[in-house]
Image (tube, rainbow, N blue to C red):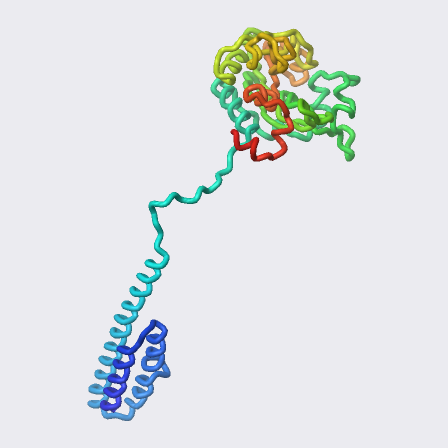
Length: 344
């Protein structure tokens, strides 16, 4: 048996030396060292030997087995290193070459504008209303009734507002002003919040109008709030948003939920007030509406108008973006034209 082991050992060494690939080594391992290999076949005869022979032959078998394992491993490492070097040589990369540019997405210009406006007002002490207090699907109660809008007001017509076919008093909100009511019902003064969000109106789509757009509502209710406070806040917002102090004017206007009410204009950024096509020759551009919160609105939410006053304002995000970036068609924000979006 000892001679048999030595013959198999010599034969295995020769096969390992003559091996050319890793696959050849795998075949040699199966032939000699696997459970059904030649070494294991001979080892099965150890039981028929004397104790002394078992110790001698067993030790030799283990020594041969260990030596062959080492030879296989050394030869395997050589083949692996050679193959790896060949592959690296063949697939060599020039790391000095410029890499491939991976396109990176950008934040939509309307989102950029919204974020910028929100940041300005947060720096002025306003917080952002919780989403639950500024829902897009509203009832007439919050979209009109609590905002002091008369039953016969044109804004309630189906030509202006989207009504649900399931419930007649449910609408897609036509303004973010309803957030005022939700906030004042859930919080006690002092209240100083803004509410950005989407709004919907039954409009014919053209370069200036869309049936879906974005607004930001603002509300400040506390003791001794005046129209002067309103002007100070909005003038500072305009200064920060347009990047420099610009002449503004507050024109008397009407909104059912504010009294007095005003529209705010800024000097035309195109012609610097000289008059051009953008400002229709007036030298001014309207940017937002505002006013002091109407007494009836405060009473409706349980706030005593003899103790508290407040102001509210609302602005269109698309309009402000169009003014700042000289965009002349609102539809560009929604067409997903990469040539337009990549400019921001």
